[in-house]
Amino acid sequence: MSDQLDVRTDHEGTEHRPVTVIINGAKFVFMTDDVTGRQIKEKAGIPQDYSLYLRHPGDNEPISNDERVELHEGEHFFSRPPSNVS
Image 1 (cartoon, helix red, strand yellow):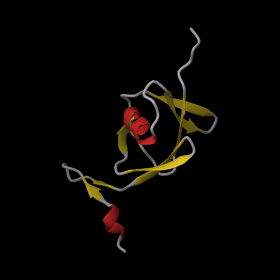
Image 2 (cartoon, one colour):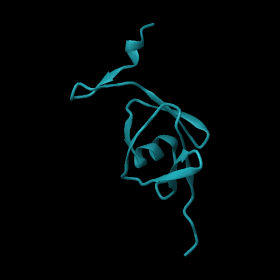
Image 3 (cartoon, helix red, strand yellow):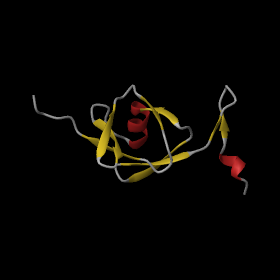
């Protein structure tokens, strides 16, 4: 089977390959590497009012709903419910 079957071309002629990431411990495949925090939450069934984070060694990067994210194969994201602290 050819690897070419997994390649998608957008309206500008840029090729995109599926990207697999881990969200809250489960694997999800995106057909593009350019997504928003909202799209990540929708794909994983995470409520929009939850906080989303990209896991980095020694730190976690918060991702807002409207923030654009360039996905990389194998990246790990996790969510947290809204805080009740005021």
